[in-house]
Image 1 (cartoon, one colour):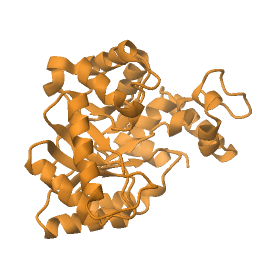
Image 2 (cartoon, rainbow, N blue to C red):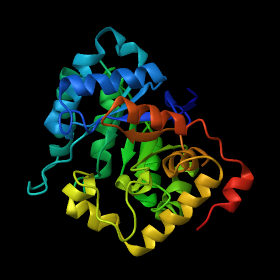
Image 3 (cartoon, rainbow, N blue to C red):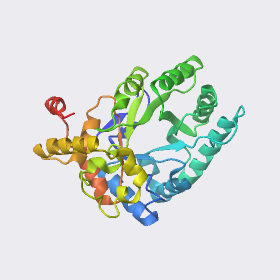
Image 4 (spheres, one colour):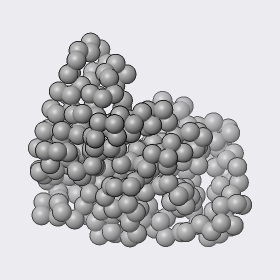
Length: 308
């Protein structure tokens, strides 16, 4: 599988990343192991998880399943913000970051985190507190690269400015929600990442499932499907406007011998700022379908003809 470097100084990531949020939530150990092994067999080396996924169980499963193959992958994980109802005091965020890092290292059974994300910015703590704590972890060798997630264009620019001024480790990438139905980030966030040397790692490339082709306008959600089980999730992405867009995109893909899922992933990989696309899976077949999508290289003509 192709690899791309994360930002100006980050690690090389497989262009398809395995989102491990299902581990310990939808999938227990053996089913997770089957998904992980299918990913490794297909050439995926980028594993994305977080402290909060499954209450830490996702990290535990990755650590248990990787074993001697730890050095074959790039592990990206994220620390959880301070509790929202906790009153901020100076140093509280730094303590949370150090504590979170130690917990992730233990659960992942590793001596270093390859890419450590701030899952969400802290609205109350000074920006430099997180940046200094992350720099300390890099200097200690516990973290190799740091990155942001769910941030604005202004936050991207400010964090890089602070780190440069103080000679701290700079963010090398940013993770954002980006897909064919959610393109607001193209106005400011993606250009800010480019200006500041950050690679972009999109999550929710399939719009929580709407871009799989599984759901149709006017039809009931398939029994047992994500939208059938999670009405709040369906309310977030399901609309007549989005269904109309899905129909146009499905026709576009099928005219070229592909599925809408393949189009969703291939389109993101055609964006010059994208390093790796995070794709979740609950079965080895889903892993293989996600990997196959990376084989479609959209031409300039394809991109120009893409329906709005």
